[in-house]
Length: 359
Image 1 (tube, rainbow, N blue to C red):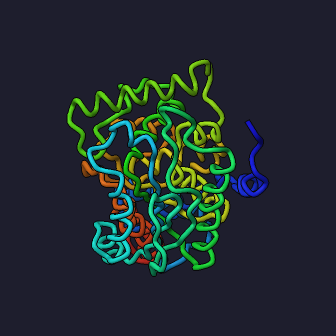
Image 2 (image 1 turned 120 degrees about the vertical axis):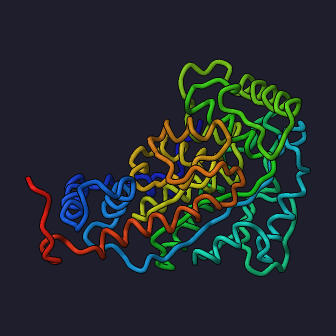
């Protein structure tokens, strides 16, 4: 396997751990606020993490962005999805006309939506509002051959790096990572098997509404794909090799985005199973990235909870969702901002003249 591209080496070298003293500082302030110690529960944990990312200078109001990476998957030819592959392009057009769930939530929660074509098997010539960064028109069929070449993986990762740079230039502080790609739960399930060492049966769900026969077919395709590419693997394969053999262009792009956003010290909200698969690859490349990640929710896909445990993330919401698009991540953004506002705007006992509990 070829070495990491220089652009990615540079990004990874700039991902720094958050300093423990900032977490200590944040906890001290939380304990001084006019409330019983620990009474805000998980909100306090979220506030500590956010303060550690933006120590001493929490930016308010928070500027929010959501980035939806779209690509097709060649493995759809094996019948792993209840939807035809053309739905990827149709949904991209739906995003651009404002009719999808992510459009509604992004408008409601004031998150600027950016849609990126990194590998859709369609042309969008002259389509306003779309970031055109197509590497190729969909991945190859991973059941028959590697899904991508090394150069295609690198190109897709660099798309994500460029989009994180744009987010930073726009002054966004809280960014959500979402996706669209028919067949991508098959790719994400294969990735989950490889990074967690769990069997396909434990991590594979029904995706976009498969019946039991469809799920069994999907499981068989995942097993055969893993056997084809990684039969002799005694340990977790290299992350770029995972992406090359069983990944997708949108998953590779999200990996680059997550790494680059962490390098720029931005707070990143993962969405569901697919974006968390990308986060797991990023985590394998740079464990420090975990400190910049928030898990928006836990989806109904069984592999998602295994990935969250593997990375060490606790989901903010659990609503039984399995839509993708960044929807769960955007829904979690107001919870994160609520934690930050409580941290920054509540009065302390001394300032408010309120007596503390007896010690």
